[in-house]
Image (tube, rainbow, N blue to C red; front, side):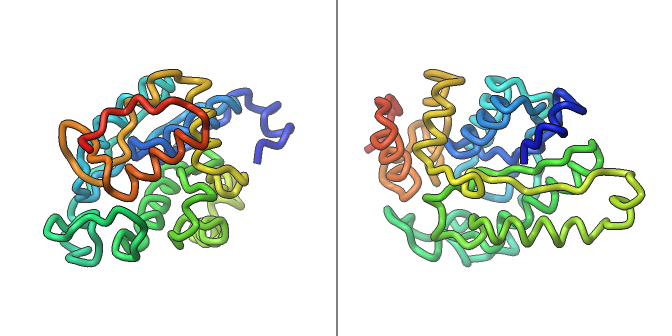
Length: 236
């Protein structure tokens, strides 16, 4: 990633970035903007309880100057997921620390596959999502998953790649680059300042972020580790 030859041949290479509205995807967009990438954002409505995050993703897109930002409706996935996880099933209690029921089955594989199709259509060489080193309890956030999926997706259209119709893609994440959640927060804060407080980490909807779920707790911890005052308003 970020080879000098690539940056020289095109001063503004394109990156398709999956943006949820939280700290991690904000940091990913900020990192790639700092590296000189032209940003194309995708945000997914997959039937998540925290629909508030979609509005915050739009704000992040504007703050980072995304060239385009598409909101993709795949809310039918909620029916397919059934009661498999707490992020789409409103009847289940939201845990305050990591539990296996927080994992939405191969959610990132679905997102990244759609993002890759989009990248092929616009000639982007990079598809990115916000998985970081602190995310490793989640299988689809691990570097080996991203690298293996990228290989499979490139094979899925290998003839067009060989013919030069579109470039081969790489899937990038902060974890692949060796970055943690708090390190990504520092990068976001450097570029966006207090706009980082507009991000939405909570797994639930509401006027304020709950302050109790696993994601809210991870958010609080990231601010503490980053040495940045957390001005987020929490319900608790």
